[in-house]
Every structure is written in C-alpha cells, then in structure tokens.
Image (cartoon, rainbow, N blue to C red; front, side, top):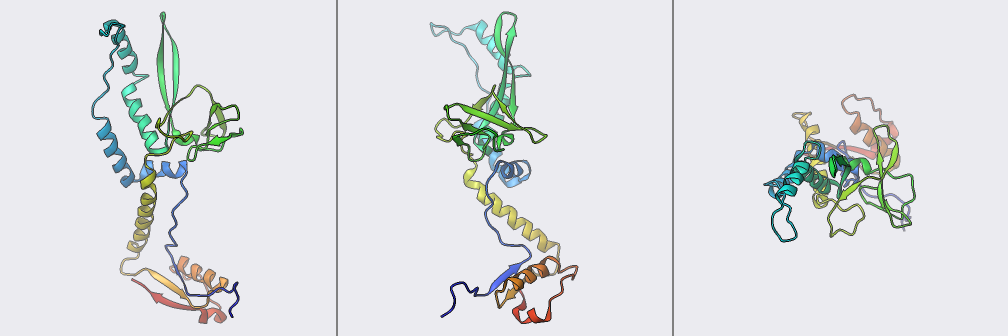
Length: 260
C-alpha cells in the first residue's frame, strides 16, 4: 500500500503559470477601473443609462406651490463650480459601482446670512481600503478603512499619499440603502472574477504572440519530486536565456512535450 504522504501523478508546468481567481481588494479594483477596457465598457454603459438627463431642482412651499426665490438659490448652490452636484452624483455612483460606497467631504459655511453648501469634495474610495489603526467591531469587506466601533459609531480612516492612515470626521457616505454591509458592496462584484480571467488570458496570449511561430511550451514531470518541479519552472522562466542547467540525475524525471 502506498504511503498517504507520497506525491504521485504527472504534473504539467507552463511558463504562463496557473490561473487562480485573485483576492478582491480596493487596490485590485482600482487597477481594473483605471486601465481595463472591458470593465469600463460595462461601467460606462450603466452610467449612461442611469444618468441621461440632469436632475431637476425645485423647492415647494407649504401650499405645494413652487417657491421661486428658494428654487433659484438652491439651484445656484448645487450648480456652482465648487459643488457641481450633477457631476458629483455620477462620481459617487461610480465609486459605488467599483467599491460599494461613494465618499464625500462637504464644506458648509455662511454666505451673507445664509448657511449653504460651499464645496462638495469627492474623495477616492480606494484610499479607504487600508486597515485602520483603531479597533472596529465591523469593517467593510473591500473598504476596510470604514467600520463600526464598539459604541456603534461609523468611522472613516483614509490612507494619504505618504502611506499614513488618518481618521476623517466630516464625511458623507453614499451606498445602496438596501445593503446591510457597513461600507456597501460593489455593484461590479459579479463581473470582477470574469475581468480577472480575461486579463490573465490576454497576458498569456501576449506571451505567445511575443514568440511568433513557437507554440506554448509545457514540461511533463513523470516523477513529482519537489526538486523536479522546481527545475521545470526554472526551465520555463529561463528558456530564452538557457541559463538553467539540469543535473544528469534528474533527467529521467522530466520529459519535454510541446502542446499547442
């Protein structure tokens, strides 16, 4: 009877490696959002479908009549360059699509005797993906810098460009109101594994294109020894430079096979 700890069976090693679905993180999603055309095609189609026309802003008085003066002032505030509500709505939805939540920093202040929204700053949601310095009872799956502490308060921790994690207190968060997750869940979640597989396939195909006229090489390992597998991977990585020497005692363990 064979030992239960014995390594048996034939192993195939390729230069492209083995595809495994990557763990999702804010950094990984940001890479898709900034550079993957397949991902952005789906995202832009959804955005154009939802936001075909700008919102209508109207104020009504207690009698249900349009309050002209208040409507004019509210429109001026929302359409001002520093607030630009129409653009910020779309940016917030984009963050919800990518990461599950849109993060804003509202700046309020007085204009004459009226307290108004003077500026609405959209913060990059991916910067809230760092693990916070404080203890949180519940934290977001993707945006781990957003969570609930022991007192039940939602807290926000952002990583700046210097790698320092700081807590922010003047924050608006936009997420799906039906989501039970503290930092929401990405709308794009169902397609993320597919995008990852497509990216891996394209990278593998480009490696093949770079070797015009040459098929993808594989090495068949007849005896699955750790040293043999290590040598096979060395051959795949250094096949162009021919810098990998195979000891004579290992030659029976490997047999070269070309697979198309």
